[in-house]
Image 1 (tube, rainbow, N blue to C red):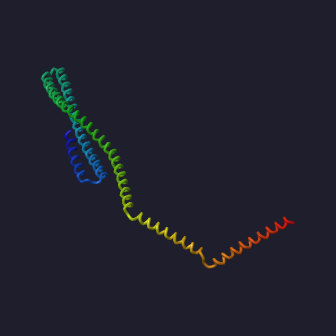
Image 2: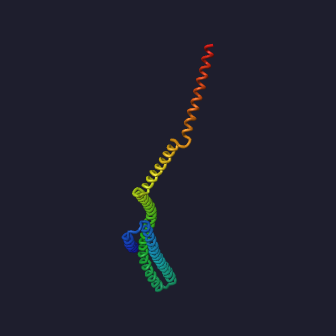
Image 3: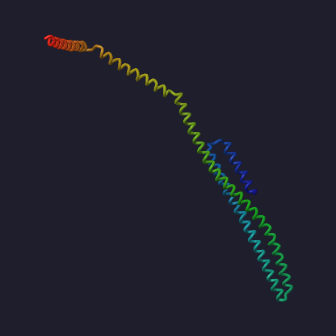
Amino acid sequence: MGIFENLGRLFKANINDLIAKAENPEKILNQVLLEMNEQLVEAKKAVAVALADEKKLERTMNENMAQAKEWENRAILALKSGREDLAKEALLKKQTFEKDAHSYKQQYDAQHENVEKLKSMLRQLQDKIEEAERKKNLLIARQKRAEAQQQISKTMGKLGNSSAFAAFERMEKKVDQIEAMADAQADLDNLGGAGSLEDEFKKLESGGASADLLLEELKQKLNQGGS
């Protein structure tokens, strides 16, 4: 477990250094995940070494147990052959291998328990990295939304304080003035230019002729009625 503690201390030191620099959040989060994955690789190597040691202890334990069994068979063979002296020596050999096998079994059991704990911690580290990846994506999305909102607010602020809208207002007044001048010019043209007097007389003549005609028609009706 000291392996993970050392990795944890190193990881915290690196992350604290990154945060102290107050860099871009996205950059920091990516760097954090990079550090975590690097630590994961180191942790996997450490677990692999511990697992290899476990396998080696198991193999040595089994070899000693096999040797103990082999010397027991030799003791039986020597005893059947009437060689008690050889049988005793074989049994002593068997005893030595059994003691070694027992010692290796104790080491193997302790190492096996240690490896299982390391595997569990490794799985937890992998889960934390996956969770960190998900959180990173959410935080970056929130960061980008906040930056976009901030940019829009800045843009709106600049527009509100700049002369852009004032320019539109000045142009609107200018156009209003031009339109007013055009209307005034049209009114002046209609007030009395060349030919306007002649037009007025034509209207009177046209109106007079019409009145005479109506009067003549009325007289004819009266005469017809009197006769």
